[in-house]
Length: 457
Image 1 (cartoon, one colour):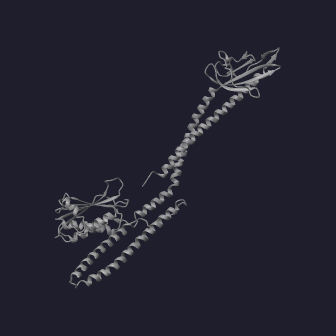
Image 2 (cartoon, one colour):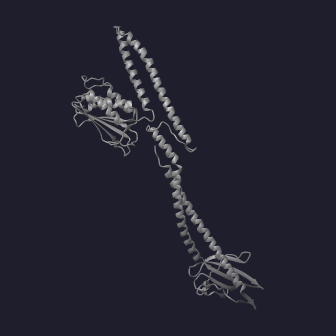
Image 3 (cartoon, helix red, strand yellow):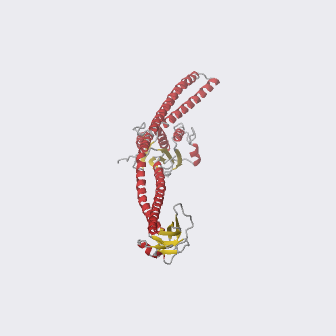
């Protein structure tokens, strides 16, 4: 079962992680930049505040601010940059030109140990400002100095910085994602190589997984080779045991049959008949075991066109009165995924059967079956004759073991049964239909090896 792609999953995971990480990075950088600007603003305001404190005199119980701040922003109305000096009764003694038409709200937090406090408020023009205020006590005289700076300007700078950071980090993210894709493909190349090696074994182009692999997947290659070796050993042992069984059973059966040849008694007849049945059953099941063992060997493949061409030549010699036409409908090499002997037995039985029933012509066609999907996975061998054909009921009966529709035609009736057994072993299908030529049409569908080479005309 195939599910997804490791490379695609790695790329998707990396992409999601990059998006999250870079978005968080942009947020953190913007936050740090905002704090830095706010700290810088506060230091600037404290500097202006100290300037005002140093320029304010107390004489005869009165506040006498002798100068103002030279920064032009304190001269522009509604700029958010304000300063004012007030006495302990909240009476404003002097203020900046920018504060004309506006009033700074009172701060609602307490002074710290240095008689300083700072708070973000909104002025009369809905501008967000940071206010720094200091309480000064001199000769039993107390006054307050407040300076504010525009925070909206800082937020605009932070917003602009965030946009630029997202663009830059987005470009970095794209480059990292591309690099991640290349790294993923490069890192997974050994898996692609081992997959191709296993495919080559399955198609019969190699006998084991060869090459060097990283230590993470090298055990997989070793296990595959060990599995293939073990499979071959099991098949060889099965063949050997089948041969030993055949030899061990045939000798006693032959002795029993020979001993009853001249025995005309009822017991002799029964023993002779049952011995023949046992011999037939042994031969049948030994042949099935041999066919199963051959079909289980990994890496077997057979050139179908070559086998069929040779069979057609043989059948033409055996049936000189029958016209045999062989048609290959695809200009590609078709390889049966199995033993050559099995393909010969299946196709040979079917062609021979068609020649026996045909009046004058048998048509054989070979093509790739594309009925399920676009990937070539099966071959379709079609054999048609111009004989009398079979009824639907006869088509079902003829596949039963030993069934013959016409006893006059030579044969044992086991041919189609053997073909059906082989077809089942290889996971194929055998279909009997009515032919447009008037006789029987047989479709044999079998697995194929992946197509790679073209046939040259």
